[in-house]
Image (cartoon, rainbow over all chains, first blue to last red):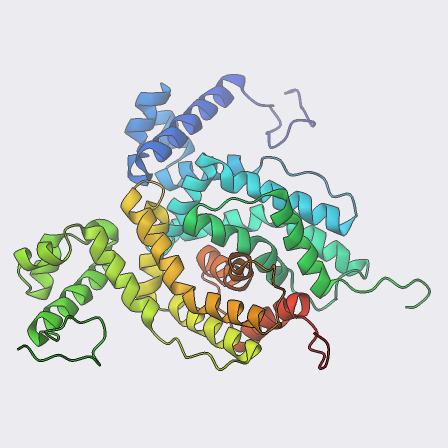
Length: 207
Length: 207
């Protein structure tokens, strides 16, 4: 019987093949370099093969379309730097917005995001990838908001999507339009003003 | 002496040349159709000339680069539907966000905006155009915020840029990521929550 490795993440019952993992990483690194240097159109299987040394057949097997390569480049950036919620609403919101800031200031993630935003109206695959990025990128923010609703710290009728628009939207707006940056004070103010408006008073002894 | 026409907008002392205005409008309409159909790369002087019937020499004279054509397509969309401020803060903010909504839901403006967002990191001309769009598109919002600060309805230390991020950012975020739409309640809530957090109490008789 094959050995199992239950501690590995996202791995089949045979465990990861280290050579396949290295090829995958090399291909994604090449794809992200091409994306930054020359934009979406430069991320072709031929160019990624030439730069990474990974065979074209292997590339096509893993990523039948170049949109899928870009999706995985984006996914790699989105995974970075999320920290586990502590249960303190203000702390958790600030730390998630700092993770978003890191993503927006990461040149690979930012470039890939802009490319997907542009292509999403023209091409259904890109629209799906962008929605997927939104979902994964805001998953933890959504959990934090939902948990605070359960604890009675945020109103039960607050829609998580609306909360996410208000927390993440201002940073995205500033970044996309004029490459704006955000100091810690900007991020804290975003959360504090949000809580000014939404946080329920925590009075002990009432229901 | 040449007749003057002081009531016309953006016109030299000789008044507008109706034929030149028609050519300009035809060229911009062709450019916006090409942009929507096939994206940025399709907006070439050759293609715009073929579709609009305007001569290539004329096109090059008015718009030496195709980025400038796209800028004017965007500018045309941004100009639409702003209403004059009434002096009532809530009313004025809501009406400006409704103008932003109309822009985001306009397929030409939205497509052009996405294109500029993508190109802004690769190409300096596009970055300048995007900043310019941001400046013009939020000009009235900025005036409304500044006037409310002078009237003592918003804090004197509130930066207009931060206010604009919080008012416009959530809608842009929702629109760009998953083609979200906004009902009137969404827009009113955005303004009301903003005012919850920022509006100063208006007590008569205090300074």
